[in-house]
Amino acid sequence: MYIFVKHYILIMMKKLTLILLLSITISFINSVSSQTISKEELIFLTSEWKGERFPDGRPKISDDLLERAKNLVIEDGWQILSNEGYINQFEGNWKMVRDDLPIIGRAVTATFMPTRPDIEKNIKERGWKNGFVGNTNSWPISILQKGDVYVADCFGKIKGGTMIGDMLATSIYSKTGTGVIFDAAARDLTGISEIDGFNAYVRDFHPSFLVDVVLTGLNTPTRIGEAIVLPGDLVITDKEGVLFIPAHMAEKVIATAEFMTARGAFSKAMLKEGRYTSGQVDSQWTDEIKEHFLRWIKETPGQPKMTRAQLDEFMSKRTW
Image (tube, rainbow, N blue to C red; front, side, top):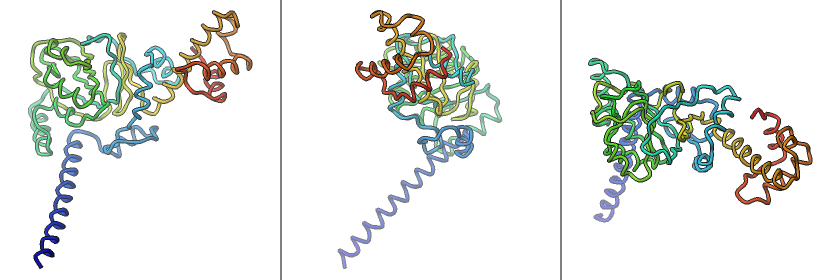
């Protein structure tokens, strides 16, 4: 009898544990939805994306594409997007913690506005009730995952617009392994600079604390300067600025850019050998050159895989 009761108690404890975990999960989902659009709305806005998604509906670009994106040149990405009609995806004029450390990752977006007592009170009370803590600029940090990039619109505010210092920067980097893009400022440049591997693109640095702003959108469409950003967009940076690539365009942009790089290397090699003239390699290729190129990429280490059909498609849309 004792053994039976003990076994029954263990089963009930396991059930209670599962119920508790489910409650925590539901509470987390509720907290995430505190200042964001619904999952259905996010899926609607990013309906061109057909791949995997996070539980909240945010597109989840694969880790493999993130790795390949490290070789993407912003000029190439911008041109490819522009050819497809995506003309509002780049923003420049940044200050960086480091100008030699690109940021690559999936966008988690946040929109901040000037504070207004009634709005801030309601937003904070709801957020705190649903599990968020602290000021609203830390709320996006609580949902960050590995490979994410915290992208925030804070209307270019500098004094009193410092979204992070070294403490929050440390928290962000420990979660994502990447960095941040803020249409705002940051403080404690010396401390942030000591976080190995972290980078921040901001409008400026300032010693003040963040004041008089409130989070009005979390993982919603937002604006960074002249660019529009959706949750899950691929973020890439270099010294010139930041490019936001729609998630459903990421693979096409990366593959096309890889072809452009391979084509350039092949053309230079052929010109050096005297195999073809500059006119031949800088125009629509003949079948002979196409077959030679396909053999070359198979025999040359580090080149992308490509079929003749893919090559024909790349060449047919060539405007660069």
